[in-house]
Image (cartoon, rainbow, N blue to C red; front, top):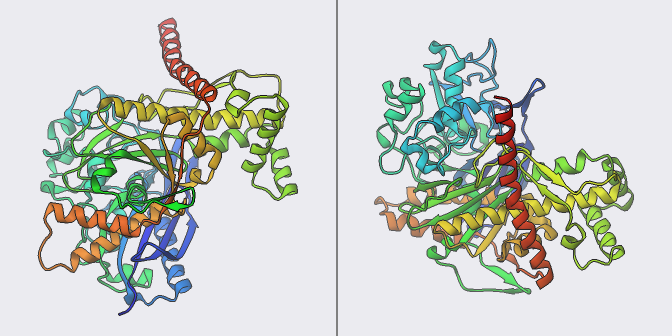
Length: 579
């Protein structure tokens, strides 16, 4: 019997990746290609991309995987996509529509994606949040300007009405499956999590009319999809599979099953929480049950970080998105916390420091990664200052990390960063200390999110990491110590999300091969079976803070929470002073 393979496609903030995996989840071949992002020098809020550029990158990656592996196109049994929750705009013939403000807005053109990180729709989000609509109950009480409806409303407010009426609006994962299959059926994940499709009742006409998007209602939501509530659960086969054109672009067979897509963070959840793990080199053999998933928080940590957890019942958490019904498993609910800038924040704090050029020079001289160099500087400083830990070394420095606003659990885009404990020092030692408190601040904010989730009814007892930050072991130990729970690292920190996408392809292939439609429980059992079978064992990082260090971290956490209250109070005082 010939080997069966599945292809996962993961579109992140700065690149597209494809991986060819077998039924055990082993990666046979993988390829990554950078994608382009346009910024506006006069407006720091603007981030735009192109579906054509992304599609070309995906095609290159898939063809490279096939070439590297020498796998026959007929051996690829299914294909799955995940992507960032960015707004893609096209006309009804799939032609891209420009989203750039100015004379070309609404015309056909390549720059047709408003990236998730784009913050142009602040006024639109404020209007939405003033409505008191039931829609807000399912996004933590406050809709983020990063979601698709504020961005769609911005386009309505700035585009010629005739041009707006010809547009289709997609969360990016749904656009990719549309382009792959010529079928624009949307996924439960995208419309529920990012497009205000309310569990059980669907689109809310009074909400859209109140915010100025009555046109969507009048056109029976054709521009948003999910007409008459028709959406697909994760991995469900879409249409007739790969179209002839897409198959030619990918080097695959027409009709190859394509699974309904996921937002990248949810693919990261699929690619991690089914894992067993090694403890002191010994594999813990017990296979987890579906119920165990509700205790496992998936933290997908790249440019930003998303925190995904599943529950049997809807849990309402202020400032945390959701609860969303059925985004991955039918009948289950999920919540999504998030930090808008984490990996990006670490890079910013390092690269903007005056000592950065010297750090780069040292890395080259020693042939070491700059993060390793920074850790060595910190360890030397700890020894010189006779402190027991890095937390003690930087105990008088307190950093609040929301330089790009707060996503969770405050849900306030106006929050900004602050630092206490500055000295007249611009050398490598100062850079290393600021690097450490940046990692510390991200860990403290993770605890804040977990605490809020558990306080409202979740039962999180462990964190399952994926993304680039998972390879920073000192940072992962800091997470475990700060949150007081084990952190499980994936077998491949960079491959967990794209593996989740490949799982969607396998589900589509197996679902399409069944003679009878699956019942809800059968679908969930198959998804979980695929997750457990295809997720390689991870490694566990247990909390190991000394009593002294735990006391220091708890004190830092108290100060962290106070920084939020102080910033809000100061903002109010300054607003009152300008009246």
